[in-house]
Length: 336
Image (cartoon, rainbow, N blue to C red; front, side, top):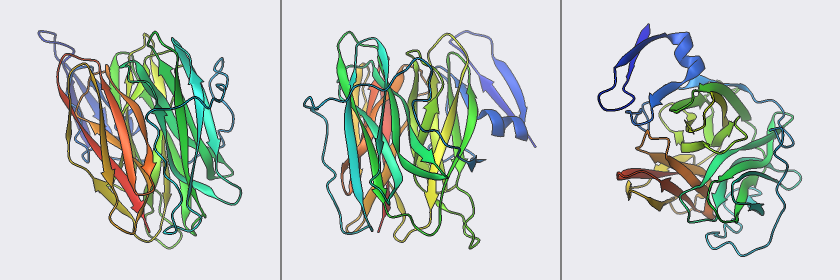
């Protein structure tokens, strides 16, 4: 089977048609031009992932772990504890993010627990503090915490927070990943499917995210969401840098009672505005992962934050540094 994708860089530009075989599509994801169309929220075919390798420590040369801080974070919520999921706890840390810098931070789950999901929250209301990476910290085949890189392209120092949603490891649990090309000036959409458990049932996504390779400002997440249809985690990555890069999509998967993916209503993300959107779990369920889908294929529309603002809801912020209105749609993964 062959797939044909047509990209239009800008109005009046020459159309370029690329014909891809199945293997190429699975390897490189679906790339769209900076202002081109993008796959719908549940329309992307998922790539089979492989067991995620250990990624402890800061993964980018030259980017040291940011200093922790206790400065007041105006956006931060409090997930608290919940009796509805065995061992459920949300841990978070706050880190400095100087002007003009990319900063790294990570948090660990308590001993005896694994991460089901996590997120990163930029505390600035600037359109130029964006999430570069948000992904699980993996050791020995399990997620032991969460990691984040944040780009601060604004002129003001800020802070950011990293969250990990932790609980007792279920009988069926895995962390998988796959790596995709992210050409300069492009937004690339990619999804990683959960594996089949030993009982023959495909696992379901609890949480997920992506690690991007660039240590420079400009490669940032646009969309990060679970897919109920393909049992996968999807991330759309913007590359606004001047060099070709890549990114690795992670899915934290398992089988657990009460699993639901809840999609909230679409919210307008006006031109030159930072907009939030949230969605809640049904009564009796807790939030373990989430994110949002942006309608924009423009590399100037980026994620500012996504995190568990309560034990039963998920909140995300999107920066739209373009002259046109877009939409964002929030998602949350819920478990009993």
